[in-house]
Image (cartoon, helix red, strand yellow):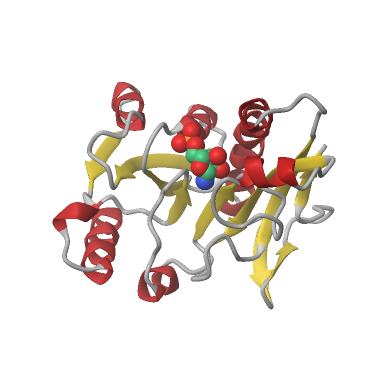
Length: 214
Ligand code: GRF
């Protein structure tokens, strides 16, 4: 096995997806190791979990910076300090500058709680219920400067039930997020795929992309 890819995780809050990635990376055979968890909010509950795991944490508080560029430069510097090769956004609630996205192009992934391209942006579960869709889910994609856009790596779909509220549907989707995000990061870290013409294509023989659950 080659060296594990040094991965930084960006959070803003709870960090349950970060926890799923950290737990997957406890396995020495997992192709990514989590070297730092960075939050833009000092009070993010997820930071305590990472510290408890012995993972370095950093706070880059957006309120301390006068511009998005200055914030993104500080974020970039923190990632570099920890030797990060791959970035996984996990509930990171900041819009990134084009420059930052370019620096991490095809090395930064994000998870979004919808079956993209449907329901970019916020309140995805409310919007899916209002539309009476029968399937909803989550997507992992490479980050581009358009929010919630970029080559798709993986999607997990779940049924929408008649009695669903945004909370019950959101919980079902979150469960799927925790399964799919570690799988997607593993494929990226193992170089099992690459981006070709804004589509994710397989490098590993037999791999079908985007991976889909179920
Ligand atoms: C998740 O639903 C994720 O898809 C979205 O923000 C939420 C973050 O939750 N980008 P958590 O902080 O990972 O628990």
